[in-house]
Amino acid sequence: MKAMTQTNLQSAFGGESQAHMRYLYWGNVAEKEGFKNVARLFRATSEAERVHAHSHFRAMKDLSGDFAVTSGAGFGDHGTSKNLEAAAGGERFEFTEMYPSYILVAKEQGEEAAQKSMQFAIEAEKVHEKLFLKAKEAVDAGKDLEAEKIYVCPVCGFISLTGEEEKCPICGAPKSKFIEF
Image (cartoon, rainbow, N blue to C red; front, side, top):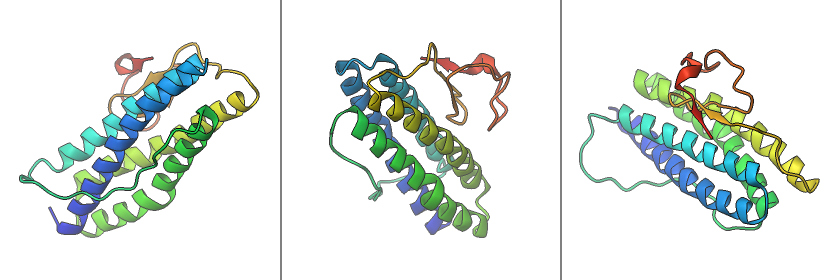
């Protein structure tokens, strides 16, 4: 694997891993504040971020050794509304700035596995941002997110609040593989 793509994948792995843990934490905050469905959305998105981290890790399967990893991450707990705002901002950064530049490098370096992993993530992050903004709107109105069930595609990290898709619109995985929250 070429050095720039490797560094970008390592950074993306670090960022997705941190988002996974941050969303678990913020899910607990939402639960304590009485937003049960927002808590489930945070936990479902945490799972989606784990999916992205694992995909990036698999794309680096030929690497070995220890590496320093630099990645961006938001910190703090400022209540559910602000946490949702921060989460949406992080997702937006990933699909508007981080992943597009990483994909350009991977494409230039002929790293197809890295490209595929990051392209799945970029498409899923767009959905995550919309869902976080929808949840923030509900919380700001003093309500919980309307969602009876939340589904996560275990291949690409797509999230659905309805489960009406017969297959994942990003990667084509069958609905039967979706994880329910």
